[in-house]
Image 1 (cartoon, one colour):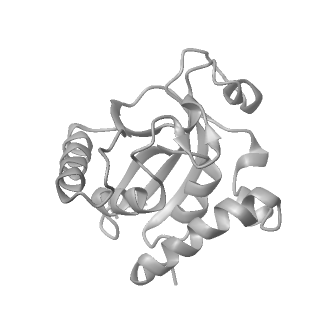
Image 2 (cartoon, helix red, strand yellow):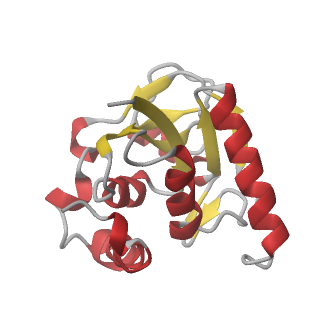
Length: 178
């Protein structure tokens, strides 16, 4: 097993966590905060948009089963990487699109993937996803972990998370966990 970690921000962390939990080769997904100036932020503080933190997921995966590029292919399918500080109705810097790289290889793969997507024109607008060196990660409060699994009938989960999970399942059927 070749264990690696990826950290991604693409809007609400509940959406990303719910999707990556179902991807073959992913061992663990932890929701949290990253990229801000305030130490030890909590959800209430991050939601104000004044801490500079983004909602992120830290994905631990077996690179012999799923590659970093595979994770990015999912990432660029399940959120809109062309909207600055926004995903749907979620607006603010905490919802920005970002890849926090752990290694120079991840940085190179992220930049190459973005260049390829931009060249393809599939989004119809330039990618605004930032590629940034990994700052300190702060795990979110316990009630945010596995939020979609624990709260599938909650309004936001039904209206926003569930459609993203369904889109992922359809597009990446072959890569779903058994």
